[in-house]
Length: 620
Image 1 (cartoon, rainbow, N blue to C red):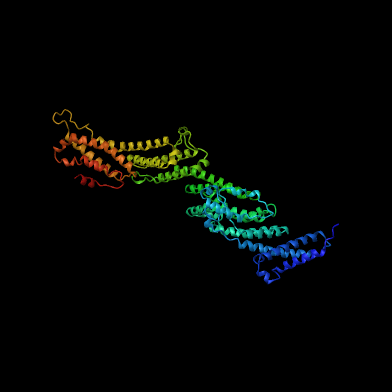
Image 2: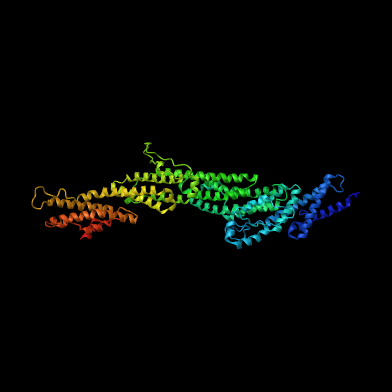
């Protein structure tokens, strides 16, 4: 037979507990206001927690038995005093251990502040692995009543590295306090307080990482140069935020709250990081919906690649139902960045086609548009892997059957097997050439128009050859087609310039019909030499100011000119010199030796003027 419980025993326990609670009532004692229980000694903290447990038991008993020896309202008052004190203690412990992380060390994967390393890093440095393993024990200290949760499996993600945000003793105290607050119905207060303090620490870490609180409007109003530097900083910081700050915060919430109740750890985690996470991703979102322009493509691709790399970590860290919005936001931003990249490429193609400049570049040199476009698509080829995945459709081109003269034609049958990205790059080159052909028509001199096309198409060829990635995508077949085009332009230049000059060195029209003396008309011969001299001097004067920037191409064209001009002049001079020298003032007609012409050709395409007097002086 069981003996009845002694009511005095419970009464004594409550009274002892009440004394401890009231002793630390900050509203009644100045000493209690100035001191924190968990900063005095462990014994006092343990006594206070035991007193709270006793008061909670008394409250439970009072609610069951109206005949209890003590008044329920008194117990309620005592528990409220205890909860107010525990709130202060909870906040104080959090604030004491909630400082911003030293972000500089977080950028260094070998830093000892990491509590885990990726598999790749473990292979590289076993020493770091061993140090981290022992350090990791602080983070994973054991509660006797708490089993590890399956939610911790995200730590196998290679780029997630947790750091110890608080010492084990502080975590143990926070869990002990939170357990009692929540069991007394103070769950909301506990979550809000935790989130408020930890979010402040998160904000400080964000500030150190250079992540500013900017609205989407603020970001879109920034000049692009300023925005570029912010994008670089964001990419670097976002990896730390997701893989270290958010992941470590999630682990801290698990250690404090996971064993107290269902989903409390996740509620505290989201209370802490939802605002910072939205702030972090709002930057990328603002970029994804900003006004499109060609110079933005590569930073948008950088952002896309960074976010794509982060996506597995985002899905791992924000793996609960309550964090769906974060995962969805990240996925939507990634999609918008991809769409922005596709749109910019399409608009870039249209911009090349419409580029309106009509003033010919002096000397037929390389047009700024050609340099810009080719440097641009060389950079595009550096992003080949990303763009091959993003560019899935062929470019919108003209057709030789369409009859539309405002857009060039491009037949895909000739480019079978090319990726959509490669077709877009070829199309950009086609559109560029089409625009250049239009610009060449603004030159009054047909020879200069041909030289302009030769220079620019040659530059295109050299840029393709200089980029292995670009050359692979363009293909050698199309490269040979381009090479043939600039060689054809060089041939057309020579015909336009030198056919008429060399025509002066023909024999036709010099022989006197029926003459049995010399058979040569000296007057016709003198006129022929004068015409040649005048034409050559004009070509020399004009084309010395034209420019071929590529040294090898310039030399090749000079050699080609000399191979036609010099033998023809040498032969003509050899046949008819004596007829001129036997007459009066031969120097007025034979003004240049073969060597003079050879030297004069070296003046061509240097881009600066050479006067007729200089040529004449050099001959003399």
